[in-house]
Length: 284
Image (cartoon, rainbow, N blue to C red):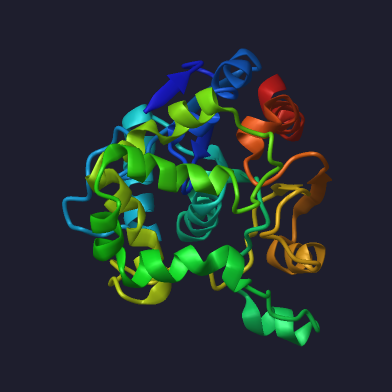
């Protein structure tokens, strides 16, 4: 767990795949200096965290850990910022434990899974390109074999580095070799890579849940949404989905010149946005 600014406004930063808490390296200190008590944990199985003792890696399991962390830190509630998988966990946390989440910041186009509401509003289902999302099926249905193929630390790290490169989640010059060495280092361990595939097993229905997901309803808390414009994972209906999924939304705002990894690609903008969104909390 990374922490800065003890005593400030509680702010939780949740990473996703292929990241760890390291993706927040450019956010921790500036946000602490702005008046936040900033905590960026590694999710169970990721980075420096322990592996799941019960073998569950679903939203309820992650959020059981996180509410326990709140209790340990003495936080009654927090501003929760989520990116990628972390965004979905944040949505689940806001719905599962609404008394613990005051506001949300979503740094991609994630929304609750409101397919019926979206369809009723005439919003078409999102198109998942096989060229972009082929890894989901492999990681979700053939995880052990894939890890066995990636049989050296170098191969595992190279595999993870591809998500910052040719998969077109971000502009081609967003990460240099030093960045990639730092961000992929935790995945050199086979067990860490295998644990990160567990969420994809949940998505593909090959791993059981510890409890049903809480993505079946709109989020009632105030939500700030930032989306990097230069990525292929978004579609043309983000605004319409967000209007239904987040009744108290601010945004979505498009960040041009950036892709999926906003905490790293545009950290100054992300920090300013969070600071502005929570300005009243910082003053009080």
